[in-house]
Image (cartoon, rainbow, N blue to C red):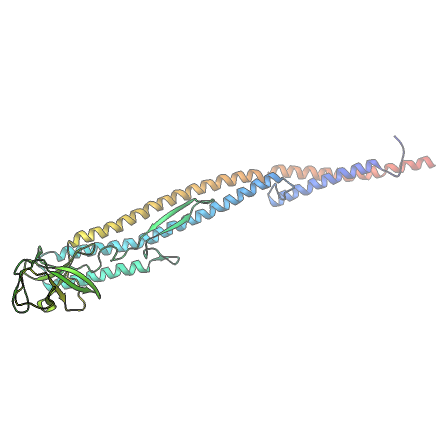
Length: 369
């Protein structure tokens, strides 16, 4: 081997190996301090890209779990209001059954009607004021879309309905209606202001409810009381009237005739406003409204079960994705401790060997003596 002094190959080789062990030691220390195998793209470019996608999915699924929990909260809030509405409707039904017996006096019926009105008002108040994060859950027919996945289209719809006394068919529910079955007026049942019999059985009635014109039919109950039957809505209503409430005119001539035969008559209510005093088949009407409430409660219960299932499934997906990501980017602490120890030993050995390699050129001096 040639004896040279300008280039110390042994020293250069030792320095190169020392740099490698220094880099390995630094990498091991970085991984041990961070707990991650991949701390930059140079550590594992492909692994970093895959782990990043896993992280994105995991965060999306975790947010979807929060959304699903919000969906449960919406359903629970709505169901809580429906529970109170159900209680009020059931109480209204109890009162209606109580009012149906013939032993009630007019005063009794008025007292019962007052509580019914208060119960219906409470139903309206509950429906109007129940909200979740600013959403009036019973204020209108609507569908709330809940994102329950990390990708587009992974949603569940919560169907909500407008629910109040009007939509339940209970608006203006009255228990002070006709006594027994009602009968349409027949020939001679109605006289004009001069006492002339009205021979026309089909009598049209025009009157107003809350300022709105409505057409109805004159009927009488078993006691001979006169009522207007309004069957234009979802439920038939009856309006109590007296003779002084009406002006009867010939629809063709426009004046009260001396003799009225089969001419078509128009009976106009002189009162500017009238209030219902009875609802036909009130119990059936209430049962129909109660069914609407129960149907919505059933839907909300079913969607809560869906959300529970979604949350459980999302939790499992998060666990599996997290485990997959961990296998890619997390450091094996035992391996890294071993690598650090090895690198430290190589550093110590390299430093010692470098010192010896630097002394090899001094042997050339012996040739000059």
